[in-house]
Structure formats: structure tokens, C-alpha cells
Image (cartoon, rainbow, N blue to C red; front, side, top):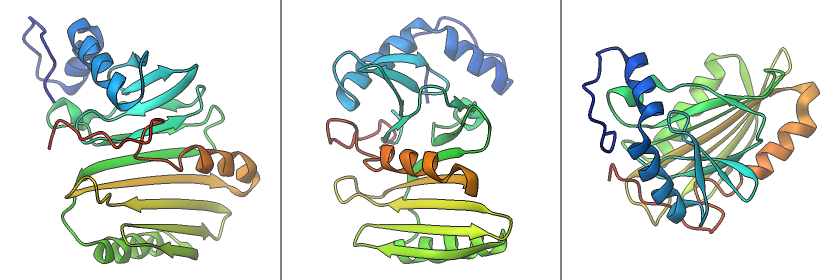
Length: 207
């Protein structure tokens, strides 16, 4: 990731780099320009570190490095991703206002096969105490639902779009039993990911 046209030398700490990103109007303008393509005309950057944008009165994540557009509720609170300070932006997480639900997304180079990634994901969930409830596989994606013994649920969707070769996308939502209704609305909202509201999957600048 390279900030567009800042005239300042960055300090070495990731915190300083992210602060400079937030202050760099040229970088924000570049993100706005790319968002017109990935999200739609009139999309505007809300926060260049969180990679959040407003479009048609709604809030969206947009990953300009690896592609991927994801709608989130406007009151969800994203986390700073410090990896982007030195490498590229692969994704982040956002919390519901009551901190009960987390939605996370990741995009990056596809190193392993879809089958290998499925086995790794299932093994990782089992190691965290989850029991697999359901899996749904297709040619270029799979969905996993799991539940832990203490009533925490996991929804995960792993995608390798045919249109964008060698890029993988992972979306996950973690929520307690008493937030099932809200979580299902969030899952429906995230169903198009990584495509934007125009149906297009943006080809990230890291490719």
C-alpha cells in the first residue's frame, strides 16, 4: 500500500503511518476515485484506514488492494488493521455496538486449493471448540456453520472467484445464540461479497 501524494516522511511506528493515512487528502481522493468503480458513482470515503465508504446512505468496506466490497450496518465499529502500514490491506473486523457480533473479512493471494482451505478451516474451528453444524460446497466457494458448547455461533464463507484468478476471500460472522435474528440479517447483507452493489468484483491494485 502506498499513500498517493503525501509530502511527509513517515515515522516508523504503524500508528504514525495510519495517522498520516487519515490526514492525507490525496490518498482519500484516490480511494474515492476507485470506489466510484467498485461501489458506484457518488461513493465517498468515510475513513481511509478502516476503508469504509458511504454510498446510497449505506456503509461499505472496500479493499482497493485485493478487491472485495462488503456492506455493514452503519453503527458497526471497525478495527484498525496495522498490517497495511507495512504491507497491503488484506481486511479487518467490525463489531456491533453491543460487541456481541463480529464480522470479519480477508482477501489475499490464493496459496492453497479450495479443498485444503476447507480442511484447514474445519480443523481450526474444531480446535477452538466448535462443532460443525453444516457445510455447503460449490465449485469455487464453500459455506460453513458451526457452534461452540457455550452458545457462540460461526458463519464462514470462503470464495475463490473464477473472474479473479489466484485471489481468495474469506468472510466470517461470529455471534451468540441470543443475536441469531440480527446475525441472519447481517449474513444476508454480506451475501454478495466480494462483489459490489453493481455486481462487479473489483480487481485489486495489488494484482
